Each structure stands twice: as C-alpha cells, then as structure tokens.
Image 1 (spheres, rainbow, N blue to C red):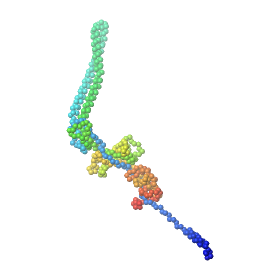
Image 2: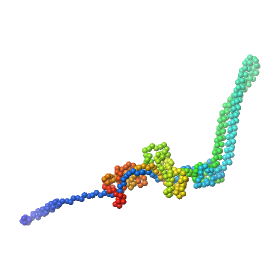
Image 3: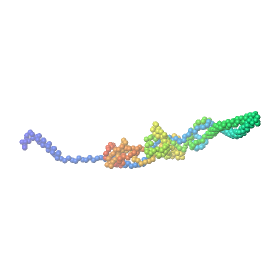
Image 4: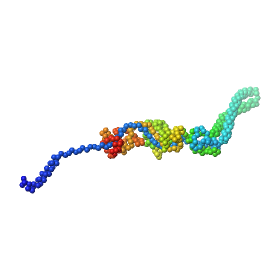
Length: 439
C-alpha cells in the first residue's frame, strides 16, 4: 500500500476520490423545504351601494325685472296742469290712481263742435226721411190721378170720333195727360235718388261720429291713471310744462310679480328632465314645464339665509343662446311686496342680483362619490375580496356625487385611491380611520 502511494499516479487518484466523496456527502443532505410566501392584503375602504333618493338640482343667476314695465306716454299734446304729489321715483301708487291731468278746454271746445256736426247730420237725415215719405205719398196720389186722366182721355177720344166734342178739346186733354205723366216720371226719378242721398248722409254721419268719438277719447286722455299697482321709476314731467304727444311721462314698474331670467346650459337640463324622459311633450311650453315638474326658489346673492322667495318657472325661451349654448328660463316670484320682512327678507328691486335654485322630482338611484371614479372606472370588490375594475355608467354629476345610469356588477364599492390598482389584487376591508392610518 505504501509502495503504491509512492508512485506518481497516486496523487491524482487521491484528489479525484476526495471530490467524489464531497459530492456524495452534499447530495446525501436533505434540502430544507422552501417557505411558502403569504399574499399581502391591501387595506381599503368599502361602501355598499344601495339606491338613495336623488333630487336633480341646478344653480343659476339672474337680475330681477318687473313682469310689467311700462313707459307711460302722453297721448295728447297739451299743458300739464296737475301732478300727483306722490308721482316721484321710488314711490308706490295703486291701480286707478289719477297721477297727471292736462289742460282740457281746447278738447272740450272741439268736442262741442263735432257734437254739433253730429246733431246737424241727424237733422238732415230726419228731413230726408220726411221728404222721401212725402214724395212717396205724392207719387201715389199722382199715380191715381193719371189713371183717372187716362180713362177720361179715352172716353173723350171716343166722343171726338163721334163728333160729340171738338178736336181742340181733345188736344187740350191730351196735353194735360202728358203733363201729368211727365210729373209722375219726375217723382219716380226723385224716389230713386233718395237711397243715394241716404248713403251720403250716413257716410257724413259716420265721419261726424268718428270725430266725436276721437275728441271724446282725447278728452279722456287728458287724465292719466295708474294701469296697475306699481313702483314709480323715472319721471319726466313737471307741472306747467307743455308735453308733445308720444313723449314718455314716467316709468311704472309692476309690483305683482318679479321675473328672473336665468341661463341653463343644455347639459345641466338633462338631469332636470330625467324623470320625464321618454314621455311625449305637451302642446305648449307651459304644459311641458308642468310635465317636467321643475320647481324654483330664489335667493338674494350675498344676503342672509332668510332672504329667499318661493318661485315658479313661468316659461322658457324659444331658442338656445348662440354664445353660451344655454336655454333661458324665466322664473316668476308672485306678490313679493307681501313677503317683505324688515331685516329678514328685503324688498325685491329692479336689477337685484339673485341666485336661482331649480329642482326636479326626486327619484331613487345609485350614487358614488366623484373621488371614487378613476379615469371613468369604478373599483369594486368581489365575493373573494379581490379588486374588480369596471367602466362607470354615469347619468350625470351633482355636487360631489355621480349618479349611475346602470348598476355595476358588484355592490361593494372601493372608495380608497389604490396605488397601484391591479385587477385581482387582494383587499382588506377596513374602517375609514384604520385605512387612513395605513396609507
């Protein structure tokens, strides 16, 4: 054995045996089992979706305007002789109150003249009727006389043929008969002219009565009364001044109703009409407004919370504003004067800047916070607490909420902004304060 080790080949053989021995030892050792990695669950706030009442709402703005705003003109040219002491800017006057009176003597004189013309025409008509009646009676008598004269002429003509009377007598009778016939023709012609004369007199009568009526209206126009309960605007008249016809005397602003024109973008109209979707519209816009069921309330901008007025949608414009692409709605406030309370609800004056709140009928719907929508998608949790990512079907937005048009596949909504959000990742539902502490 020692002799073998002394040989040169012995060293390589020993090295090879050592390597084999090491390999055998390592291969004979059992490997430890690999530790199974446990999956990490991401904490997330979860909300269960359920239908809730949703009332579509829109906030708009506009200026107060009286529903009746009249520039009262002078209808006659005359001197102002009296003005109501309360006809001043900002004062209020009731309907029917006399406020201005013009000098009326010239109109009274003209009315007397045309009234006399009417009386004259009435007399002429009566005279013509009497004359026609007399002529008709004379015609009847003349007709009877000429019938007798013709019979007498025929008898005398027979006697003349027999030689009982001379021909000269017959000629005289013939001349008398011709004269009577000529007179009868004149009467017929005169009777035929009476209808034309009546038409002329009737036309003259109509002209005279029209002038009388016109002058009576002018006389009535010398007194100006309030057409409705109004607040006075600008006043452009003074006592003793001469006013030309057509000049504006003062401005009267109606107090029974205040209107506010607010512009509603067409996109914002969709939520307001959502409950009427699919219905056939009524014939006119007023019925359509009732059908949609839009209600209104008006607030004073920068005013106290108590400064609001119940209102209603009166009508809508007939076209879309080309610049703003919005639809104009006219909101009406009835009897604002009776709603005034000192320090609570101020008077509604022309030009006030107001906020209009429009609301439609409430309906049940699913809503999600705006923050829960991630680039048009919803984060949901399935029954295995896994993350689902689905497109959000949104009907419209209102405030900080989005109203869903169709429900998602699962009711468990993830409201946490997951970074990163990986479909299928494991979630751990937690309360709000725990989730916020771990973020």
